[in-house]
Amino acid sequence: MIVTKCTPGGWIWWLPAIFGLLGATPFRLAAQAICSAPHSSPVLASGQALRTLPAGAGWFQISAFHQFSDRYFGIGGERRPFLAQGEVTTRSAYFTSAVGIVRGIDLWAQFPILDVRYADQTGARDGSGPGDPRLALRVGSELVGAEAPLALRAGLKLPGREFPVDATLIPLSEGQRDWEISLESGTALHGVPLYVLGWIGYRWRELNADADRKPGNERFAHLGIGGKVRALQLEAAAEWISGEAPRYLGLEVPTAARRLVQLQPTAAYDFGPGSVQITGLIPVAGRNLPAGPGISAGYRVSWGAP
Image 1 (cartoon, rainbow, N blue to C red):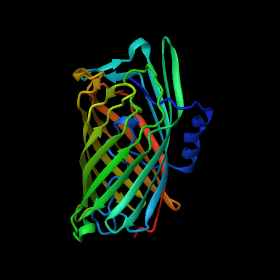
Image 2 (cartoon, rainbow, N blue to C red):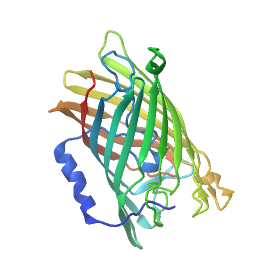
Image 3 (cartoon, rainbow, N blue to C red):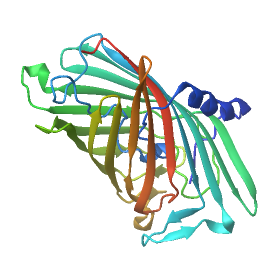
C-alpha cells in the first residue's frame, strides 16, 4: 500500500485543537480514499425539498477528523489485528466550501491537510501535509424548471503529494485521479419534523502509472434520516462502499477488493452565525479496510441562502 506522506511538519498536530475551539461540523469523513461522496450532501431548503444553492449563496466550513485503529477487516470480513501489533492514527483538517453558480448549479471544493502515523514492533512511519483536493459540480432539477427533489453530482479527486509507506491497508491516497458521479435526493416528511436524504453513485479510479497500480472502481450509497427541533438537529445515517478488484503490475488481485458498511450518527446545534456539529464514524462490516471508529468536528457558516 502507498499512502500520502507529504512534507513533515509539526504544525499539523495543533490544527485540530484550534478547530475544536472554534466549534464542530459533521463532516462525512473516513480515510480519504474511501469517503463515499463529497460532504456537501443534500440538505433541506426552506421549501422542504432538495435544492441547489441559489446563485451567489454558499457556505464555508472548517473541520477536524480523528481516527485510531489497531484492527482491520480481513478478506473474510473478520476483524483482525494489524501485523506486528500495528496501530494507525489519522488526524486531519479539512477546508470545504460550496457556492451557487446559477439557478440549479452549485460548485463544491475541499482541501485537506493530513497527518498519519503508523507504528508497529518494527518502528513508526508518519507524514503530514496537503492531501487530495476534491471538486464537484452539482446540477439540480431547478436547472430545467422542474421541482423534483433530485440532483446529479459529478466529482473529481486530484492526487496529493505521495510517498511510499509500508503501512498496509491504510487508505489515504494512492496517487491517481478519481472521477465519480452520484444521484442524490431528499425530502421532508409531512406532519413531522423529520427528513430523509440519500445518494447512490459510482467512482472511476485511474491508473497510477508510476507504481503500475490501478485501485478498484467503487460503488457507494448513503441513506440518512434526521430532524431538527429549534436549534438542535440529530441525524442517523448508514453508508455502503463496495470496490472492485485492484490491479497491480497488470494483474488483477480479487483478494484486495475493499468493502465497508459504517454508521454515521450526527448531532448539531446552531451557535452564533453558524452551526456546531459532531459526527461519529462507526465501521460495522468491511473488507481490507481499518475497523477503528472515528470522530469529526467542525463549524460551518452559510451566506445568502433563504
